[in-house]
Image 1 (tube, rainbow, N blue to C red):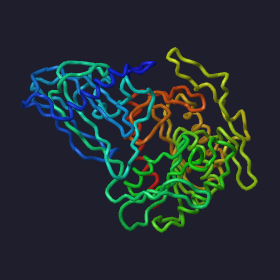
Image 2: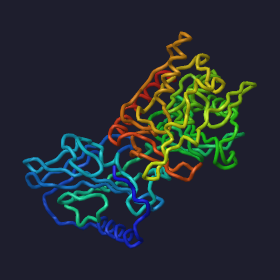
Image 3: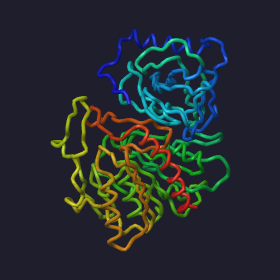
Image 4: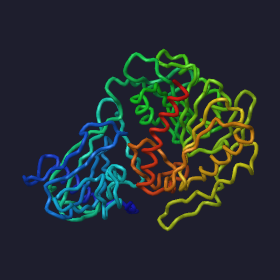
Length: 445
């Protein structure tokens, strides 16, 4: 992955790239027998693509590029450098990239390494605002010779636009404002009933893309924010599990939900909330903890007289890298040093799936999962599964999400290291996404 510049390029550079993109979109390029074939041209955002180029010269050096202009008018791009075979063909499922943003055979490398263009603010997440009514357009192009993503290319040899959809036709999005609950419901097409899932992230506000994809795969899904959205608390203060229990009860009674059990999927802080929910709320029968902790983190948790204190970052142990990125991987102690924060998972009657990246640099989620499993085994429990991925970092998301090695932590206003290697991380996302769905179906259907 190319490191982002500390400052954006001049506005003139931004204008030049956008002008080149407009010219590219309007149909420039020499006629010829070269073809860029992408199957399918219209696909779900979590599906694999077949990308092939033919009609090149024997052993010709070319650069494949991908480019996305978001609804916020931010540009993301990526590139891979290839050499055609003796017959002038290349197939990303067999041909290795020899340079650019990734190396080796990576069929989805162009999409997996999309990152903010040099003139954009670094560390942004590639996201889609309108998940239902329109696709994310990705422009693929082939250029003669080898060039990097930091150069403005000339006229492409060939180009192709593809559509990546986050929702299948007739998926419904319903804004939720019921009692204390805030969020969005995503309901699959058809009459149902469907298995019901609550989706939790770490970030403030409402994050919907995973819930929308889950609905497209047959789950009625509630994207549930718990701070920084509408009239919810602006920051993570003391949390009450009753809020999440209210969400479980609401989903359980929804006419499109099969029930009686409900599933939960949570990432990072959402991961330890998912563990607390399966521990204390009996209606939760399946819990997916992604890059989470076996202890309650960030803020104290209360539930019907039960109190879990919080494990917090020790800011004095933050390492500032030469790039200015914060390495927080050593700021969390082993939860065993703070027993009153540990989630008593042995009380959980539901099933738990731990998903961890072994190169997580936010905290040691692999150790946390191992400690949780050790506790479960000690109490004679076998209601768990573990997916552990070498080379994967902290933000393990559906495979529509490109790799990010850092993100802005709002608490500090600075980038925080996430860890992982691009292709290994995204391969873990591809593998875990299907296994997460299989796990939820097996315990909710």
